[in-house]
Length: 533
Image (cartoon, rainbow, N blue to C red; front, side):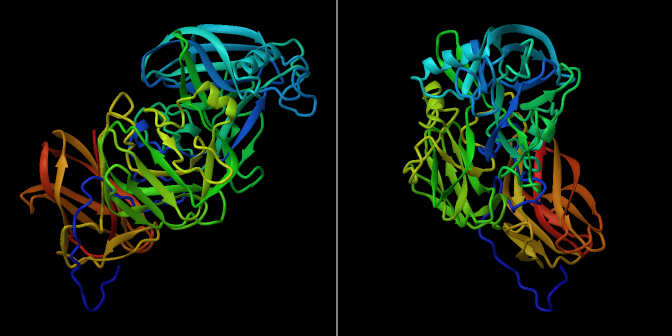
């Protein structure tokens, strides 16, 4: 931004020693998202859609990644049969005798992401499985069915459940694969054949490699994204501006009879107004520096407040309002540690994730601060249950996900305006949310004090920058004692037209004052992110 005639040095107290987040471009939420499952948002679904298996060449692939080693005899998945003889004749989710379900548990080729060798399989009539599932949930309507497949599954490894209808007359005897849906522009790695376990933008606390795919040529080719079902889906049922993608919903039964959820939530286009979600039984110490909510409507989510219910510490922020993932940087970090419980409250309206009663019976630990699914409503909003989860989160990394196969990368994000000292720099409102650093002349600088780097080695450093005509910046440690290099800034088209540039540097483990220096003027800075390679 062009300098004002009077320059004011702003004394900012404290530094975002872990991460803070200025809201990001509308095409993605995760310019501040961490890697893998620990960086996944805990939400992201708006409704649920089916895929009727009406032809023998149709295949639905549910690709999943177990969180721990387990010996299973069932894999659960979303299943709907209304319209078949065993339920009702008034819907199109099933027909006739419910078809002949063939469920194949397969390995996934790590190089291609495609189904490989079969591990186990089951063939069963659709109505037979529906009636068995109904009997196990106290004769409630089942929305989960299962494949009886005995297998030893390994943590962090990709597997697939391939579902087909082998009935000789599938057009008149079929069942449906059911799945929650998310906005195609917001589902990140789940809308493609992602093979990187540390990819960013994951949702629903899932591994980035988990997805649903669809085939109409008996599995020779697979469709991803919006085309990953028997018909195209949209948010808010038929909103052409927001195409949707089916997302995984699954779970397991261990051979000892214990049911273990994988991703258990549905959504039914319900909103929650002035709601609070709590996350308990935390596994990892984190500094919560950002908060956000998901809205599929035009009503704003309002102001967000994050509170550590174990210590009383709290902080608030108000994001840019509107459709999608609305997030903001907290006024100050809220630290949490193992065993704590924290909450996020919104004064406005957010989407609501749900557990049908039959699903609660299958996975009773969900909604009761279990280690893997710690979210619940401490005071359920009218018309909702404890297990119904308002679409609110805090981060950037989940305190419920310890380090493991999907969370090995280390990332650190600094908000540009949170400098501990500076020369010649001012801040302003950022179109991406929050504030950015600007009014930068040649010779100006910013310092972010006492930043810890956990390991020696190579780091990727990314800068969110804007510049009408192009410029440059440089990075150093401890007042220029260690110079890490200069990065060119392209002409982005304006003072608030943002782009990301990066370079790689070598840093020894330790604590440093991180400095950003301006060898030339004419640029703004929104944030800096370090990732250990």
